[in-house]
Length: 108
Image (cartoon, rainbow, N blue to C red; front, side, top):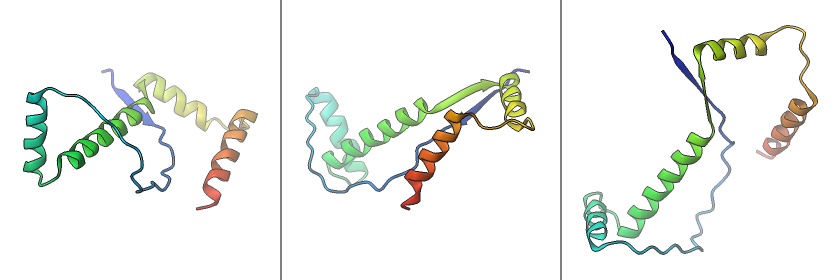
């Protein structure tokens, strides 16, 4: 049996500005616009709100997917064993990453 285990590395959420100061424009077919208008109406939202929300969700999923590492069961076990091995000191690179993480989250 070959299973896949997925590990996620997600950035720390930072406050999002709600000020809408940027603009996006797109040309679409009449058919697509009609479907978007209908879908927005079904959710009781404006077309702009519907399109922006859908685009934001698609962007979130794409970025999240890019942050995932998929390992087969054998590789995930090897990683777990390696991470739990006694007597291993963190590398300078790992220490630097931890320091950056701590610094970024210290202000919260």
